[in-house]
Image 1 (cartoon, rainbow, N blue to C red):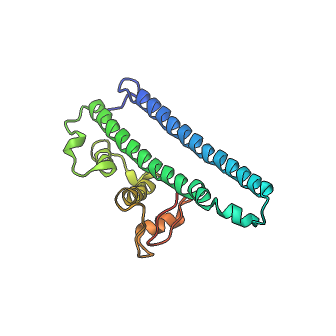
Image 2: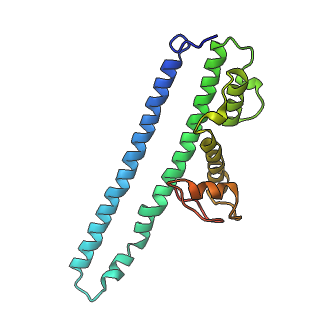
Length: 191
């Protein structure tokens, strides 16, 4: 049996999912820009304080008084946001895969539904695709990345993003080789 993209609703489902991803992307970009703007304002304020200082205070003493603000703006707040974004995107992916499983099940007139498959989360959806729609997930380029991302998501949720202590742990290797991620064993991941 072939899958009709329009009749099954798959075309509209994919279009709506893409719109939602673009909304998340836009929100992320707006948020990132707000930190850049805040950083520029902070730098101007530091320069103004240095230039208007009438005492013999050294410039680094003035800029040092802004240390916490700089740290929060450059490190802490962006990492809070980006960690939340990882959780949001992974949740979005899981939900969309569950819907896709139902669309495929209906379209193929399958008696087997997603809830009939053992497992949980994204892995459960992948198992469904393999058993019902005969997808070969290992041939999907992003499959391995999504599996690794699940470990990162779980560390963010259950361990505050603190990476495993052993350097050769799977998650540490993923962080090391993934652009946009930083971290060392036993410390929090920086996204």
